[in-house]
Image 1 (cartoon, rainbow, N blue to C red):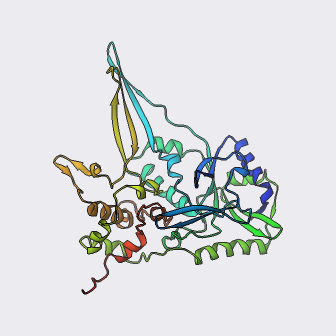
Image 2 (tube, helix red, strand yellow):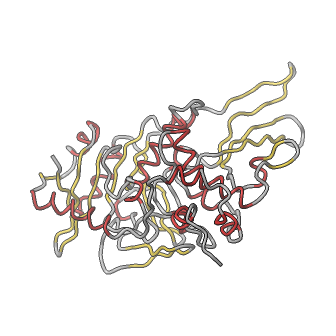
Image 3 (spheres, rainbow, N blue to C red):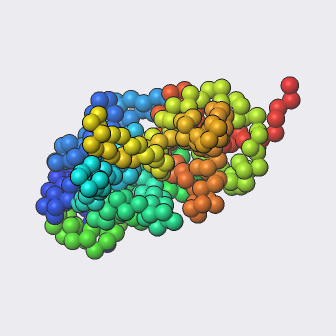
Length: 370
């Protein structure tokens, strides 16, 4: 049974989570963008802010309202909370007997994700499938995922680069949460409809000043999601897309996009599902200590596919084609789903505004005469 929490009481949710020992992470406005950071009180959230996004374009603007979650997505995703950008794995120290290996401690954290959108919950599920349940599980990732409380937020507006409705990943969270909030704003009545998705979520809700939702409020929450889906900024026809991409590896569109792509790797850094990494070994100047570090890497880097004799994908065309076809086609073969959740970050944060929905739709179309 959904309940209603007054917007003025949102701070009670933050306090309840902190009181249970969770480090509360959520969206905050910093340096002109929405990023993920510690939330110690509800006023830390980006109240009254909306983002304006387009291909290669992002800015925050203040609006004449007090909505907590009127923005869509910033450059940060929850990926960095569990699949961290840089992580030391172990040290090797010289001693009288030779050397000793000192593994870094397994990470322990108890975190609450406040404001996870539906597409991002799907992205976390995809990373779990690969990094916990895959053929080569990552125990450090699994440790970070072991004690997490998820407060989802159903989007009240769609961004210009969003296409989660096409991917079946949003804008409404259907699973993977402990509590899900839908922000309802009417003159003189600002509140959240709260859906409960787990026993832990029910226990937290029991600590809050809530009341049962009435039928009108339930209907209003549904209308918020329907309106958001209807105003989605982008769409992608996924019917037959996997086969079309894999059958058109020499389509002229790959040459076209290669003339625009900078191979900067921004799309892979902001993507909530990309998980490629590299390992770096370093030593101190005295030769007494060495350490191994894991860090994010991008398939757009020339050295990423380097083997003896050179790189397997030496051209930007080959690297862009690898990224897009793996994300939208090969991922199905490897992991049983698309690797894209339709968040649109790769479009917004591409310096030259390359649009994955446009490129994927163009591959396989007949060539124009002349």
